[in-house]
Length: 193
Ligand SMILES: [Mn+2]
Image 1 (tube, helix red, strand yellow):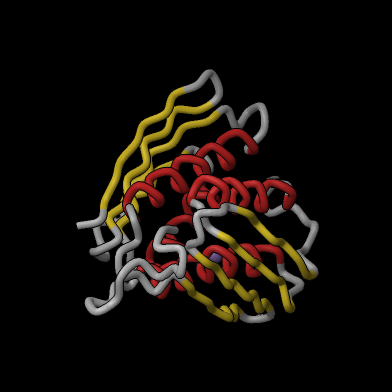
Image 2 (image 1 turned 90 degrees about the vertical axis):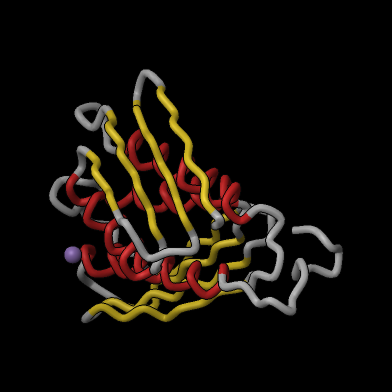
């Protein structure tokens, strides 16, 4: 089984994150920001991966700390679970529609973590959470997961739909990228990711 777990406690957040890439469940996500819990649950459900995340953050200050730090920890356990990447597809992509929203996610488990965020992501609050925090999650996850991550908002007016579609698209693209082919070795001409 490709799995990993980590706990990280700072003065701003207290987080335990665990992943198992080789099973659909359990999915167990608890945070003190229900909207974020909802989005992470969608990512896990549609990613067919067992994510267990228990996270508390100082959201009374700003949801930013919680959202970024969960991204950091999820990236770290993902990278540990992938290991040397023996036999993985490496690339994954998904166009994810959700009513008016259409989001493209294309990613490469490259070892070089970087978010490329483009298109017309709505700049509107959802239930008091400012839209500027969402790219911070994806940026932290990409950086610490060693993932080249493109997210492109192709269409969408409703912020809830667009950002939920982004989490689902990431889940689905990751599912494709982590699939293992028994005949493949490490999918890099360099021999390492
Ligand atoms: Mn929703």
